[in-house]
Image (cartoon, rainbow, N blue to C red):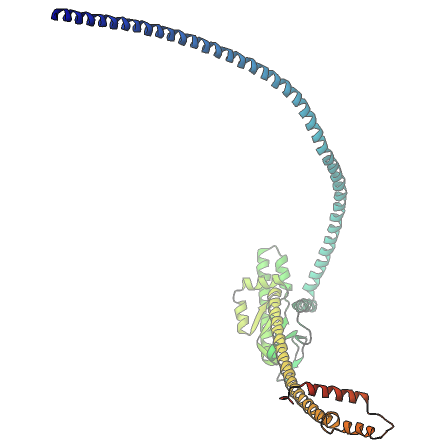
Length: 402
C-alpha cells in the first residue's frame, strides 16, 4: 500500500516536472519570437528614418535653390529701383547745392573785386598815415615846444578818460608862487578829498629816443639810448628842484612826472634800473600813460566815495531836520486834538442848555407860542431836528448811563 502511494506520488511529481519543462520551452520560444520581431521592427524603423531624412534633405536642397533664385530676382528688381530712387534723391539734394555754389561764385567774384578795391584804398590810407607819422616824428624831433604840446594833449586825453571833473577835481596850468615870489605853473593839479592835491607834470624826451629807435647801428643805438636816459634824469632833477610837493597847497609829498610815450618810458626804466628809485628819492614818481590812468582812476574813486559819504551825511542831516519837524508837528497836532475835544465838550454842554436839557431855552421859547406868542421868525429846523435826535438818544440810554 505504501508502495502504491509512493509510486503515485512520484508519478505525480514526474508529470508536474514534465509540464513545467513544457511550459518553459514554450515561453523560451515565445521570447525568441518576440526578440526576432523587435529586431525586425527596429530595422524597419531605421529604414523609414533613413528614407525620411533623405526626403527632408532633398526638400531642403530644392527649397534652397528656389530661395536663391527668388532672392536673385528680387535683388535685381530692388537694385534697379534703389538705384533709380537714390539717383532721384541725389539729384534733389545736389540741385540746391549747385545753385548755392553758383551764388557763392558770383558773391565771391563781387567780394574779391570789393576787397581788392578796399585793399587798394587801405594801402593809400596807410601810405598817407605813414607820411603824416613821419612828418609828425620829424616835427617832434626838431621842435621842443611841439613835443611839450603833444605831451600836454596826451595828458588832457587821460584826464578826460578818467572821469574827473575839470575845475572841481583837477585844474590845468594852476598858477602859484614860491616864497621868493617866483611863479610856478604845474601842468595839472589833481585835487583829492580832504583838501589834498597831487601835482602832475608832463615831461617829453623824444629827440634822443627817436634817434635810438630809428638807428640800425649798435654803437649809435647805445649812444642815443644813453642820451635819452640822461634827458629823463635831467627832467627829474629839474622837477625835483621846483619842489611842487612843498609849494603847492595841500600837495602830497611827491610829484608825478608823466612820460607820454610808453616806449620811451620802458626804454628808460629798463636800461637804467636805478632811474625810478633815484627819482623817488627826489620826491618824483615816474609814470607812463597806463600807470597815470590808474592813478587818476584811483582819484576818481576817492571822489566818488567822498561824494557818497557827503550824500549820506546830507541825508542824515535832512532826516534829522525832518524828524524834528515831525515831532513839533505831532505836538501841535496833539494840542489841536485836545482843543477839539474840549471844544466838543463845551459845545455839548451849550447845546444841552440850548435845546435838550431840563428847562432848555428852545423848550421855553416854544412854550411861549402855546401861550399866544407869535414871533415873525422861526427857530431853525436843523436845530430843532438835532435837539429831537439827541433827546431820542437820551431816552434810549439805560438809567445807569443817564
